[in-house]
Image 1 (cartoon, rainbow, N blue to C red):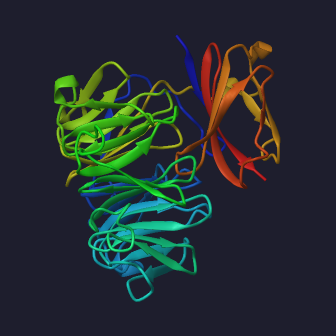
Image 2 (image 1 turned 45 degrees about the horizontal axis):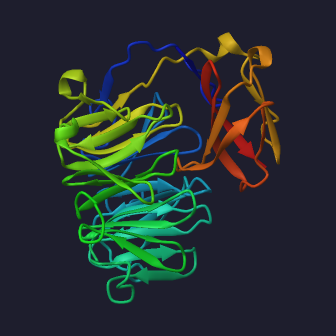
Amino acid sequence: MKKIYLINILFVITIVCNAQWTTYTTSNGLIGNDVKSIAFDTLGNKWFGTGDGVSKFNGTTWTNYNTDNGMAEANAMSICFDEQNNLWCALSNYGIQKFDGTTWTNYTTGDGLANNKARSIIADAQGNIYTATWGGGVSKFDGTTWTTYNSSNTPTGICHNNIQVVKIDAAGKLWVGMECGASVFDGTSWTIYDQTNSSLIGNDVQDIFFDATGNTWFTTSLGVSKFDGTTWTNYGTTDGLPHNDIKSGVQDDLGNYWFATYGGVSEFDGTTFTNYTTTDGLGSLLIRTIAKDDEGNIWAGNFQAGASVHVVGNRINENNYYGKYSIYPNPSTDIINIQIPNNNFKNMIFEISDIQGRVIKKGTSTNGSFNISGLSKGLYTIMVNTENDIFVKKIVKD
């Protein structure tokens, strides 16, 4: 059995065995129990977008934001971080907001946003902000200029102006989830996927995510679809999912898939679904969103029942292995090296993810060295899988 080491430069990691779901609610400090979105900053803080505002949790202390201290509206539908660690919020009726840690800046239709009803928000590696709006299509904001994609000016890509989700893949392509299917924009042309021209399980696309091997996953109200670029594979309750209404999905560091459903949380190892309910510690069976933090833990946003966390695997105290598992130099401009016991680099593979969790580089190494010169400056997470161990560490590209 492989051991899993999570070596984090920002946290002391303690041993956790037989972990269960732990739920946080307003009684613990969360600002609102209706958790709609979860994101993580570069310092490892957990952020929660709720119907009553935004909460930041550093593992001990909660810091809450609402209209009393800067937000234009408390109903945060979606949150994300850009490459500069600014928080962006999609608000239900008041556009979008940027929070730099001190100041909240609001953007609405008066500034160029397509519609003030924002539903999803994402940042790409170049700093562009994409917003899914309800009734106005998709807005792109580069910090100066606004660009709108809607059913009128982009009929080959936007089949309906009610947009549910926007995502960016590892290649920088924009993916859009709508009530009429999904589309992808490569910067030049659009491609639409729906039930008429593909094997997409349902047109009501509620979330899109990408796995480490390049597959694109679509969660819909009728089940889940996986698309490898050629072949579609669909999953529903007959395959083991607890409910066909799938709100969100994510892949963990071990390659397993986690789904937020209206029947609890479901874990999929590629063969078998394992389902979790309130008897396992979830706050509710109605799960709005699911996300993975930098430590590999899975967070679920519950409908009116707070946020629940599940620790994946066993955590080993970093101090017990100091000097045995390390990456240097860190920060680095080009080559980083790994130090492991006995220098056993046999069958070593690695994956590097950005702060949005997107896998942007992967490969193998026979000598424990990796070239990161092609990466943009910033904070990344590297997962190294050797013949005996798996460990994860933050790295900084200068």
